[in-house]
Image 1 (tube, rainbow, N blue to C red):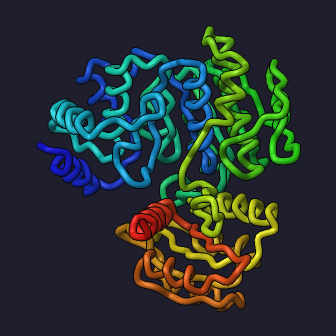
Image 2 (cartoon, one colour):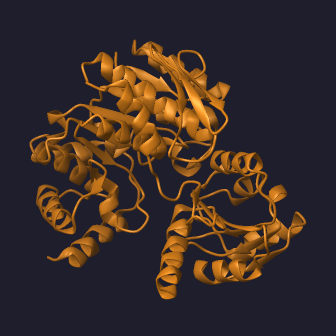
Image 3 (cartoon, one colour):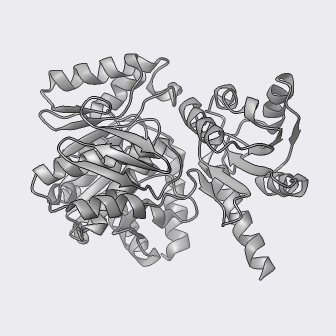
Length: 423
């Protein structure tokens, strides 16, 4: 099969939906002779910021000359982005070969899309002889396919209400699912948490005698102008600058740095210069990303209450005014919670649907906005919504695209096409 045919097979697995559990992935990994046992793993769960933390750690390892694998989801433009070696996505040819191998290994198993891609990543990391694999949890943690590994370090970023239909209706229940990645005596790096989540995560770590390193107690970041100072477990680094904009990224990068400190204690050669340069070099498209230098279009994948609150805080920090918001969300998201922190900051909404099978109707979003006193219009697709927002843009105003990473991906495709048409 060629790349397109291979992807058609892979995406066809989505008919099995989301099935949380570890039986399938364990069977497949056993048939593949357990590739996950050939390298140490850092396992990262949480509701918000986990992708940025993974990217930050990968950049630190790259700066130190350590060969690292990164598995994250979803992708923005190409499936190959989900599996990266030293910051580079795998090739289409590698993807085809991995799909063929894992397909053979999963014969007779009703494997889901995410289980299949997790096996692909773990196998590729073995083939590329990575020195460390960084795994981002897809959903939850306890029953997520990535939890088939035994990590050297675990991380839980801030937990908020998200994926309630799968993980539980309250914060404590969701935190309990995230806590499922914590392993006996394996160090846990804990991001800033709400009290209910903190209690659940801390109690689980204590039960398993896992050393806990908490943000705000054992390590911290202090914003200083455009940069930040990191007070770590042992290190103190001043005048750091993150390659990712927003004060919240100082928190995320401090988690990456804390993981790096623990790895140093485990024998990894990660010089202080690599930590500093890695934080500066990190990139993570679609997360508070200004499109080009004009800084007229801001893209962010905020898709839950926590992400929307972080985005709102960033907009306030830069004193943004005249914000025209292109918004859309998956049907599984609580759109009212996403709207709440942002509506007071925006001038108008351009409501649409991201390119997913089930989305919140644009008209429903528009109705919620107008009921709150914010003008809103509905559009059939992200491209028309973004075109209308850009056409209405006045001097000093910005266009915000947020509500779904799928929406951001569509917007980036549109912007790249527009850019190419001007050349």
